[in-house]
Amino acid sequence: MTIRVAKPGFFTTIQDLGRYGYAHLGISPAGAADALSFRIANLLVGNEENVPALEMTLLGAILEFEESAIVALTGASCECKAGFAQVPVNAAFELPAGTVLKCGSMTTGARCYLSVQGGFDTPLVMGSASTFVAGHFGGFKGRRLQSGDVLPVRQHGSFRVRSLRPGALDSWRAPRPLRVTKGPQQDWFGPEAFETLFSSAYIVSEQSDRTGLRLKGEAVHPREPSELLTDGIPLGAIQGRRMVSRSFCLSISRPPVDIPRS
Amino acid sequence: MKIIPASDSSLLVVFGNAISPALHERVIALFHAFQAWHDPRIRNLHPGYASLLIDFDPLRLTHDELSSVVKQLALASDSTVDRRAHVVTIPVCYDLEFGPDLLDVAQQAGLSLEEVVRLHSSPTYLVYFLGFSPGFVYLGGLPEVLHMPRLATPRPSIVGGSVGIAGSQTGIYPVDSPGGWRLIGRTPLPMFDPQATPPTRLQPGDRMKFSPIDRATFEDLPRRAEARLT
Image 1: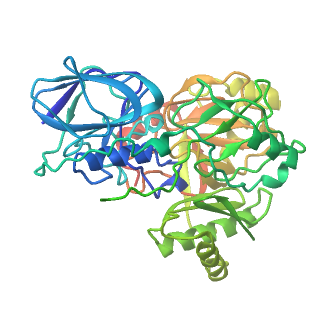
Image 2 (image 1 turned 30 degrees about the vertical axis):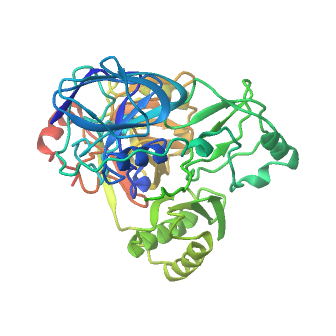
Image 3 (image 1 turned 180 degrees about the horizontal axis):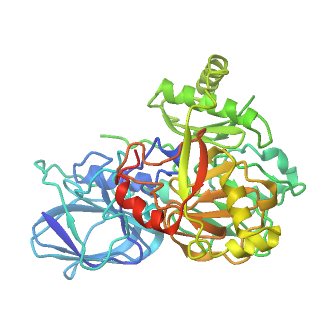
């Protein structure tokens, strides 16, 4: 079975949970930016949690289903329609053959996941189907999706589908402070710097992507400027910056959360 | 050796705060020891100039458990690295078309083009680590006269295989990407092939040399070389 991309949306890629074990060769994990929503999408349609699915950013894709398929949408709130009918979120549902699924703009959050029962059938590169756009490999032809792409889907025997209890993700999605741990260069910053960091609100700027989020807000300055020898940077690291725009960087973190498998 | 938690799922092992082959040898020894230990709870290893970042699965391993493994492996892995193990030769065509900044570099260094090429291709460089993009090497050993600031305005796109200089660094852009290094030549050999095992031509801890080739050899080499990196 195949799904045709009529319009790709703003930035749509095939991802799984990432490519590990190659960082020493300059190969970052890639993978779903919101791993929790990604795993939920797969579990809802009866897939294993690491099966390749679509990650859509800010504006969703328009997809043509030549055959019937069971799909699920999770992550950012996004107005999606099958023909003229509104489709559910956080629940698996069946699309009849010939359906055009139209995913619109995201209203809350930036990334939405579409899983299909069986999963997208893209080759594994270094053990993962994740697209690494800057490296030009993985996923579908190593790039973001384009109009006219035809995505292969693996056949699947099981029809066990699930939906999340309404409100199950409310506490997860409610605005709340990000928890942080102090990093290896914490000594470079005085108490007032941490006071600033922990008492300010920050806004995610437009200059953000899958590599990092640039935040606008009160800058955090080190005690004195010093030269840092290059070290590996962990996922989720917050970088203080002396910048005119008074911003600092935070790369997105994947909290170690497990999904209850009821 | 200092062991510092770097995040909720990583430890940073710091051997010092300088760029030196001696410190780096300890980084590589521990890196190799972890590779040989081959534990699925370790997700990624990032060697740096004088540190090793270890990214692990926090649902299956704690900082304390990993910390004691680091101590054991660091003890056992002392001086097991053969420094002459691997010298890789990378052919480079220092043609003005491939090295649009070559004249500029020669002028700033007060050297002739031939001297720049000779100086750049004479040292045996140490591959400190890879990062920034797949297969991108951070090399030590660039002669001081060739040290040069990066371009004020980075180029929006650079062809994979381009060889450049920035600060005290020299390196090769493995894939097409933007970048601000001063370009002095190009290698015809792929530095990165996602289908190959291993996917990169150079590994952390390797020694490497640049070998000057002419334009005819540059055109001919890819046809003679195997598609794979081996």
